[in-house]
Length: 434
Ligand SMILES: Cc1ncc(COP(=O)(O)O)c(C=O)c1O
Ligand SMILES: [Zn+2]
Image 1 (cartoon, protein in one colour):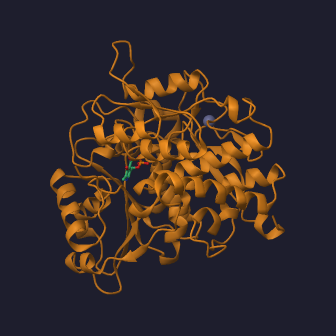
Image 2 (cartoon, rainbow, N blue to C red):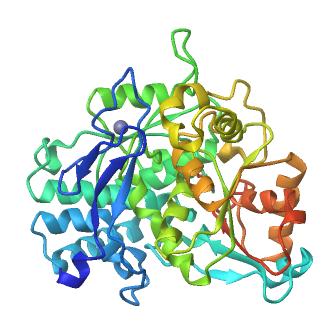
């Protein structure tokens, strides 16, 4: 790494709740060091040098085009891996991913959706720009979160700092999901030939289960047990597996801080536009948090609107608790257990990928909304449906209802957005048919 590259790198981690810091040279930092079973309410964030954002190379793979900005890259550099070795690691793994999924990582398109912008009454200087993540590995942005995690694991193994030794003795990866995250995780695990356990709900889509089996994931169906605490039973089983030595390979920052690294690249790829607004669909919240984090590096923040559905909106509820509570956003973290409570009766929605009963990364998203003067949006089911219809008829992107839910948020508050403003959306999760 040249001196110039070092200036772009990551310094380390800082907990947004207790303020604990961890140097980037530490391997396998998944959670805040002060998080315990009794007090899991901690959330690390990445601390980066305050360097201007720019694309480093024209490589189509964002993990190479922006390589010096990634936390995994700085970690590897501190452990003595030269730039050529780090680049080779990305290329080799990406080639394996392409063998399994049919394509490798790409900087995805980010273009103005002219017909949609016209239909919604924007003027030519404003409009809607869509980041099309349906072109990403496994058809969604989820693989970005997990590729950084995997690069970190492989680096740790390679430099001899993995407690399990080498490839022959790997503990399994673990994830709780039955959708895009599970597909991304099992695909990357297959690419690295790393065993993986996937904890799925009883309602899991048979097509997803079939693909997970093809990828040789170990699948555990998780009915609620009488002794389970409130919340998603898949998360309970996932945490038990991690407690028994599995590696958290999930897309939730408080469980796997390394997932926060890779998905910032979505924000870096959108930064040149300097959008006025970002509407991001929120399930666990990692996507919104990372996309805004990446955009923040450009020095300008769009207003973040975190979009949930009326059938499950724990983030909007937590946000109102923060506003009505003592100490405002600054002291939200210490009230975590009181503010972010599991949604008691998650209903149904066509956007079924964002029905997480808790917004795991809620604090990062709430801090982002506070810093950018944004706010949560709760979309009606009719808006979720209309957004997907508009997306399918007025763009050539074939995303699921989950993946177009950000547009539903825009529809919900279109009257307070000026026709001259630039709105960024992230369409993700290719529509699966049949
Ligand atoms: C297509 C798509 N968009 C957005 C999200 C929301 O991401 P997050 O859970 O990080 O909030 C998901 C999550 O499953 C998803 O599959
Ligand atoms: Zn902490």
